[in-house]
Image (cartoon, rainbow, N blue to C red; front, side, top):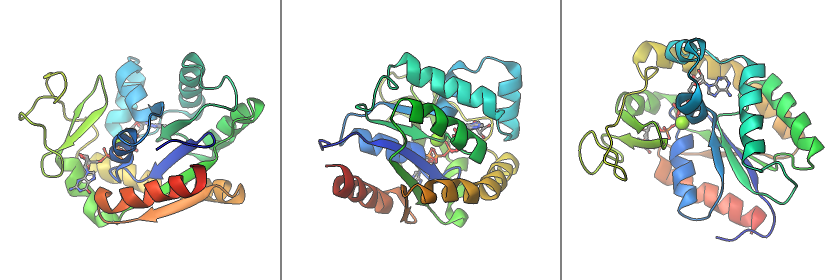
Length: 221
Ligand code: G5P
Ligand code: MG
């Protein structure tokens, strides 16, 4: 799909709702720079305090996280003007992060123009997480039922070993979910007021994806 105007997209959704999965599906339809705050932390967050916070399911402080994301967008020259399209997954996830990002993007005339909440029943999510395996260097995601690797335990592209995320266990997952439920409403209100918030519902990523694609096609192509 080609776009007639820049798409600056944020995917919101509970842990395990499929933000990373929708990102990879979208990349098969269009070329789009993407940034997942979780991947960024897992790939570059060598600080033991960051590793510990992730393993406990706690959030990284807003100023640290915002600095990392804005730094990465700037390094990749995605802030260089209003003409670039890109996708954010997992950031912002607090109202404060949203305000800080909004301020930075406003100064580049490139505010988020499409915020999509993936609304998946939380009852179906836990099982997905227990069966998730990841290739940390690329961020590629697998699930033993939904999208298993071609060879058990190995990344499809590099053949390198897959890992379990330290925060993918029942106790930490519940903490992440509780945090999400506590923080999401003010964030949604912030973007609803700007007229850019959309919600797509579905029990599976295959049900959600065509809805997401249609939304983008109807508004940006
Ligand atoms: P992350 O990495 O951003 P979360 O908790 O927001 O983590 P997560 O867990 O990465 O989100 P997701 O990306 O929404 O979930 O879901 P996914 O990986 O695509 O899908 C989950 C699993 O389900 C996969 O195995 C997938 O294959 C499978 N699946 C997908 N669709 C289906 C389906 O239809 N059916 C089935 N059966 N399976 C399916 O953040 C991690 C931590 O980093 C820090 C925090 O500590 C956070 O806890 N962090 C931040 N801290 C502060 N501020 C921020 N902005 C931060 N961002 C990250
Ligand atoms: Mg993810």
